[in-house]
Picture 1: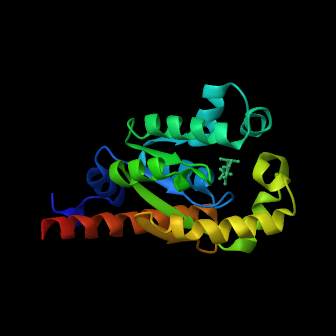
Picture 2 (picture 1 turned 90 degrees about the vertical axis):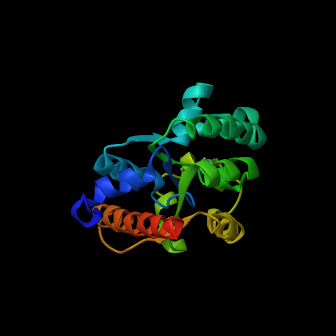
Picture 3 (picture 1 turned 90 degrees about the horizontal axis):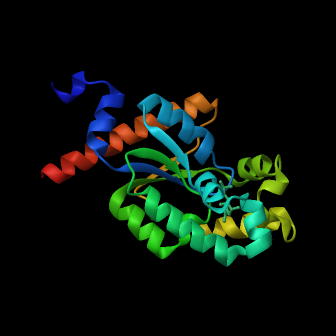
Length: 196
Ligand code: S3P
């Protein structure tokens, strides 16, 4: 069937193949909330890397940080994501720091479709402050300053993701639809470039 006659979701799924859509970006950017909605629309499985780490460790992310420290959390995170990336296609939401790991990023760039959800600072800050205990990195000083420093340091690394999607105003469904459109465009363009 000519591609214009297929639905957007079937075009995306066909072009995605076995790859997972991997959502990266700062804490509070909507990786999990939008990721779940995207997965539902595409009829793909959704997994949240932090939840998978919690299952593997038998404790919450906050407790892993408290009991074992951040380096141990990062080791676990690397191992869990290395497994998840082989289990696609799915929509996979990563924790905000995961894409900074060279091994993890290399693996995702090679085997997945990485998408940076790029959300402005004030929106992120307002969202993360709704559940302050959930983000152990923000408890070690002034959360505004910490979040702003993290964002400045991480943005150039998130920018290595294959697709960049800025948030749009409106509801979560608006953002999900915007993401679907951007994925559709991106995959069509990539297919065209591959054919040349
Ligand atoms: C982290 C973000 C968190 C979680 C951990 C570390 C980070 O995930 O993985 O607290 O380094 O930014 P979310 O991005 O889902 O909040």
